[in-house]
Length: 586
Image (cartoon, rainbow, N blue to C red):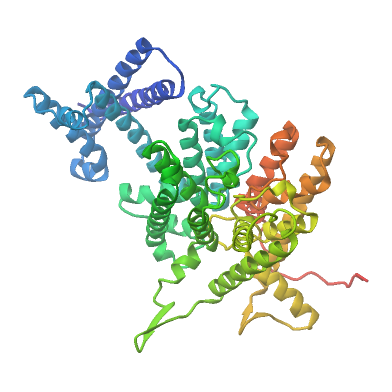
């Protein structure tokens, strides 16, 4: 075939592949997302098998067109591995040695065709995902600013999640309005936990799985996920992709980007699986089936580590089956703390600079950032526990024994800064306790993790800056280290922008919501801090009110500075100084 003929064949095959991919995904969405008849399901199965045939045919056409066939196979080794399996299965089925039939017999399935359809659906989804991951590498290679890539990835995830939650199979009633679907999706992706409809009863298992995938993706970041898997498909990252991911992941060592991505994903999954196993051990007797207990445990483990605050109990962790379950609440609190510390702090314990062994003893030496995160985390947890106990001893803690009072105080102190789980009734808190919660939600947790707030490092720098100004010192110092002026300015700007965004949305809510100022302020601080605690007004918000909270959750998750830098084009820095003039501030 001539080169011109190959170009036409390549273009036409790509167009057919895109169309068939859309049809394939559409058929899967219709089958699992809608309530369809058996005849319609049979038709959808034929469509899926046809799409698989087109996918396989496309790979052979590409192999025929490409000159460097061996290099092409290596670059698309995953696709050809699947095709090889399909061909082997086809020939084995001719001699009645089908692998899928053997799997079906082992699983005692009456309808073996079901397995073929499942494999077909998996292949279609993997085919679309793989091409999306390869496109992700092109995005990293583009001239788009890393901050805008970060923002767009969250927007795409939120909108996709909202559409999936609107599928009839996602809800028990078969319907949900767009604003509630958008609110739930935003709350999940931004790992907040505020809900307008009950996660436990309004959504089906299918819908709950979507929500879990959304806050798992949102907790780590879509670009983190896609880049991690793209590494294995492309064989590595180029220097430009490493530089961009350096900005997205806040990793100083560009050469360590790949290692950091792998550690991040592996650490996350290991912690969540171990957490799920411990949670299962604590609550499996409360459920009728092992499946329900396992899913419930996994859901809460992922939710806790991602600091999402979503629960499959209608009363959240006030549910009688877990409210006084010390093992369950302890595991949840440890997962929250680990997620809130941030990956840089977690990884800091395992670096060569951190752990030193001398005379059989392990000495841990932390850098300044990790020291601040750990110290502030302990200070806020202990301080919050004591204050909560003192302020609520004769209120929400009434009727509990002394041990339970201190434990509930500890749990609420942990979850208030980041996660949003509640084992006590938040709407009954006293005004002083609510104000303390506003402060904890405002500060948040550590940088580089799954939590929100201005971050404990920002708060520490601001306190150190104020102290340095009062003492008329030229440098902002923490311990025996000075903080660069650029970091100080960014910290002050971050706090100012946070207060500004919260104030603007709070001001708007006072026009549309007939609620007390404390309730509205609590909602705004909780949304921006991606905490998820509420004084019970979230389901009663008007549409404008829900939109305002959605905006706050989104800005709070990506960060006020990232939001500003993402929408405002940076100007070239001046290479000269303008004349100065004093202005009185007294």
